[in-house]
Image (tube, rainbow, N blue to C red; front, side, top):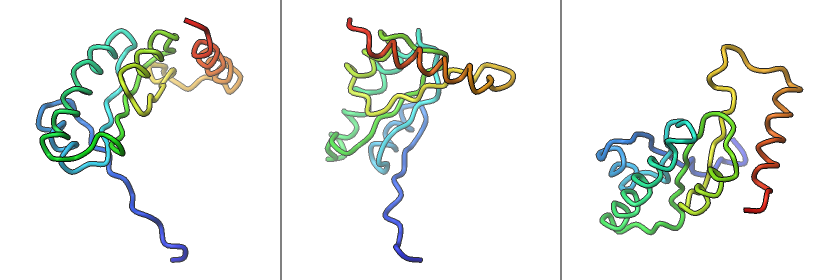
Length: 123
């Protein structure tokens, strides 16, 4: 195959202490399972420090290790600010995951535009 693909990064999931240690020891990053906006802060407050401690224990720098969280529903600016303050590298937004079927394209575009507008609001 040409060109040859680069190394594929491995992001480890899981919220248990062993999963977080495994992510810090062997992974290129950690990815959390989707949480409602009101529970995201609790997840971030517990996971980010635990990952940073474990990275230090294994002699690995935080730089280059990606921390990803996921939020259900349509997060407001407060949730997006929390993600930025906590040092998340990525926030996955899953606004329709609880619906029985995906919304029509027009509704999806409206919802995504509302999330983007919320992120742009001054705090």
